Length: 455
Ligand SMILES: Nc1ncnc2c1ncn2[C@@H]1O[C@H](COP(=O)(O)OP(=O)(O)OP(=O)(O)O)[C@@H](O)[C@H]1O
Ligand SMILES: [Mg+2]
Image (tube, rainbow, N blue to C red):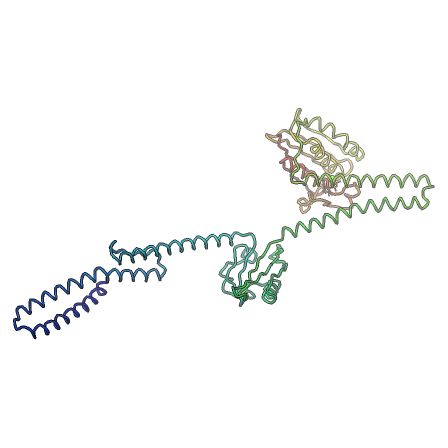
């Protein structure tokens, strides 16, 4: 700093001395009085020196400071400010420079905020994003894309897409986007261990202001959930069609045989008509179950609650299952305290008890035991249905609440089952904010526990 100021001062001082010497030479031509000449030269030197110091302090120093501040601004330090006297023309320069620095600082801050906002949006968007330049180098991968492909951004940024994104479908999307210069859509499956992800990729070209291709952005949507729903819907339609087809084929077959002449044989007629009757009952039950399920599955479905006396409800339900139990020699026992009540949809709760008891009787061999226990447990009512039947294997337990799932298709169909009973039970329990659990062991028996809130 000191050297900076001493160097010009030395130069100015030399200039002044030169002027003084020249003046001395000129005046020495006019007078021989060396005392006067010396005095004049000393006074001249002092005046010039004072003037020079004034100019230096007032102009040169502030300008140098201003120049240093500009240097700092150029380097990107927008916090740099110049401190110079408040008056004079240089002061105005200083003020303007400070305003400029302040504005630059504000711009920089705004830019930082905007950049942060943009990164937050990009990182939190539910679609994966990959940005490529025209040569195929990756410039950006957001968090969602990383969750799809694994690794961290350092593994991708600055690398060629075909070196790091190991999927033929992605390569094709990029190539076609670059080739046709328009949006390209492709679906790929990504398998990691047991997990399969379905991803839809949209490749969109990016152009500069002169409409030249500058790169592409890949937008990746995880459509696994949609795919699974679609699969479930397809399965459901296939299952319903299958379930409807069997009784309809049977009804049609027997009706045709009757029309072809079997009508005249009284016994065959009786026999076939009773089969047709059974099959149509089966159809009716299936359709009723499907309607019940679809009603329960509606988002807006709310149970119509009323005060229910569980003891009375069980009394109403028992005759329905007693008959089947008696036929198989199964002892059906009930154990419950008096006056158990709850607020719920009566018909639906009845359905829970009927479905669970019917299953218990159906899947218990002759002379077994089925027991219904209802207890009052704090804020819940606990309904327990246990049997000594065939039980359910551990692998099958998580699936028994699925629509149309039957552990043993042939056996279940013989009992007239369609595999919708437990799906309905589960839905009813859920719309009542309750809980259902199962304990079971093959060939030993099963116990279903339903917990329903009292209000
Ligand atoms: N108590 C039980 N003991 C053994 N297996 C059972 C029992 N309850 C249910 N299951 C198994 O779970 C499957 C699904 O039961 P669910 O009640 O949903 O259908 P289903 O009884 O076959 O037909 P339905 O729609 O007429 O009830 C049954 O097919 C059966 O394999
Ligand atoms: Mg059932």
